[in-house]
Length: 116
Image (cartoon, rainbow, N blue to C red):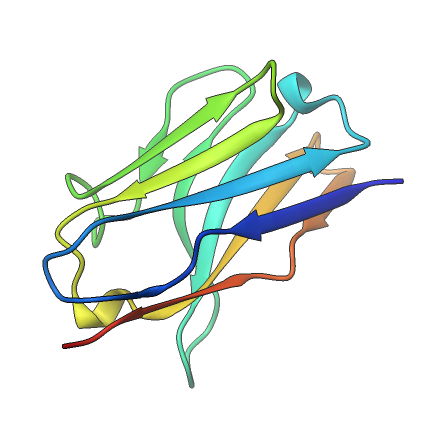
């Protein structure tokens, strides 16, 4: 059975840092392209950062230089290190596992709130 589960969301002050984690099970993690998305209230879900199965990470312009995506292909974990957080980073963050335009799995999301 496949599951994708995010954790680490919290309330953080502007300028603070936080790391999100995504644990997967039931997929060949090393073969999947992984990504973090987010959805703020009243807005569409947007891609934040991606880490393909083969290739280099990429980032949305709004987070480049502040966020770092990484993956552990042994432990089947995906991370998102977030620095210099801003109130506009407030959103539900989702982990996505994607394979060859055929398989697509999502977690239930974890809430990040950036507020003083």
